[in-house]
Image 1 (cartoon, rainbow, N blue to C red):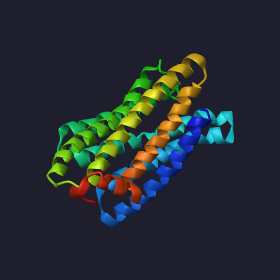
Image 2 (tube, rainbow, N blue to C red):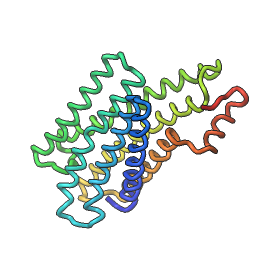
Image 3 (cartoon, one colour):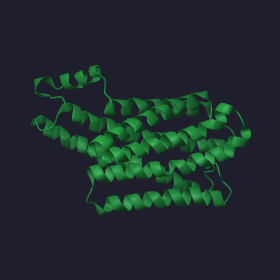
Image 4 (cartoon, rainbow, N blue to C red):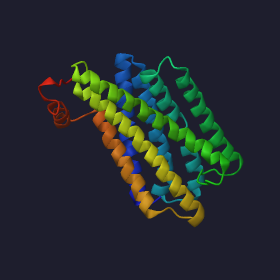
Length: 247
């Protein structure tokens, strides 16, 4: 991993850790389960990113394999919490949602565990069948989250025209859908990076930089969802004219 990606990943790890703490505090005040689920999602993401970064920052090659494996293991709960959040917020009574949660859990455990059994501790070998279990396991939940949020966004636009949904709320759904889409793109970029690494034993500088840039885009989207600055809230509400509201 080159500077373009690891710097973006470092910023993301710090941001997600701070966001997790703020959401956990909010959840303790409100007692709301979705906020707790998101706090856990971002906490495990931050820990995983940090573990991946340790051997790069200290520049000790011997730490590469154990810390990469630790990063993979610690990331397992993150997509599961993403799926739990999607079910709780968008499809609480759906059997499909429950199946998605079980499937995500099974794919991640089998993928990471199976890779370790066959000696692929770092998880970079696309030729290893277990790689695909893990890749699907951490890609599908965010694609699902994006689709559900976008579907709700389209429905909210109709309610907005009737004055039943505030424009800033509708915008949050679009931002969350965009975050899910960006995470899927990140997974696709990583897939190509790992394929190049397996062939050339080096990461592509272009894809590495793109991965880092996408991390920054994800941060921006999440920041606008949970902590939109005043100017952004005004921009969104003013775009709705006199009929738009704020919260």
